[in-house]
Image (tube, rainbow, N blue to C red; front, side, top):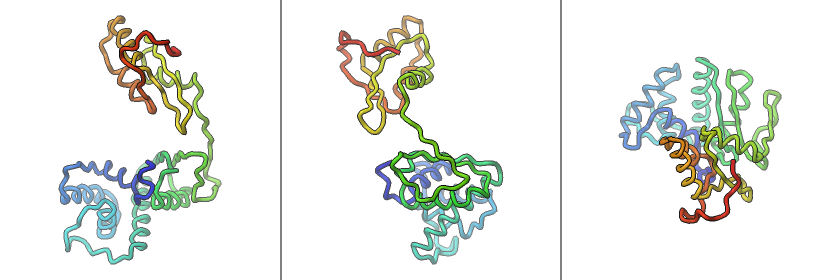
Length: 239
């Protein structure tokens, strides 16, 4: 996210919180227990990694439970990088790992450093990493023989139509949309009339399932435009 480019380890913290199934109303002791329970399934040294990950996740550790982190901020950040890689490597030893990192151009410096360390050690691990970023982004690591770079252009209208059809999975129902390519990301502009017409067509076909409508609105970049009363306006291109 462009709003968290200065939040250290932001996407990594979000992933770990999801992995550990942290709930919004979890007490600190509950979060610590969840962290310990998961880490005990690995052979990582708990007295070292639990305090590091607890600090990363802002989980208080009761005094006397673990040795204190007698580290400078720089040392703690480096030890955290090492612990994250050790955890990932432990997972990869159990089974091959696929890592997908989207929008790396918005990553914070700490996350980029973790990625750089990962790239350095990738050839010796059963890990496949897929990273996506904008063309203007310059990765903080040099090209390597084990890396492949692909440039993906914007989708053309036939591809967008196929994407929309696959999303709604209703080939018998017509939909219409416009494509706005003025900004950095394509937007699907869907007239409010389309939603009403879509529902009418479903009803005429005997369908009552609103799932296709919800799927259509869930497409990335969808914007609803126009007035619900303006049904007499010029129709948009139909898929």
